Image (cartoon, rainbow, N blue to C red; front, side, top):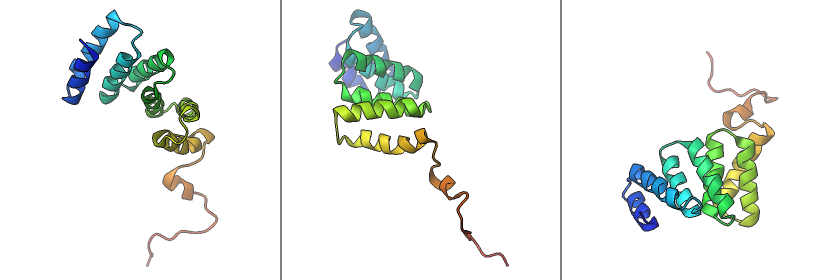
Length: 137
């Protein structure tokens, strides 16, 4: 099946069909970065982040300018809780494409994770002052 056929299936929400078509296409063209990226998208949509991470990593190795696959690669690593790797991948791509909003968001979010800083409500634990949430009477 052609890349256009895979794209059509993805637009229609046929993620399983698109995944099968990608796998069949990769049997013929194992170094097709775009097909690997599409396969990664299908796997990502099915919440198979480990498989998607491999597909996106392979796609970016084959095409070092494949920005969309690079972004999804970092997002997969984040969902797999591999924060340091996700942070590094996002930073590497941000150097290639400064100002890209998704990458900037990933770097901003992942930075504290990598440094071991607390997030959200956990930041209030251990404050030097008392916080009163309700009056006890």
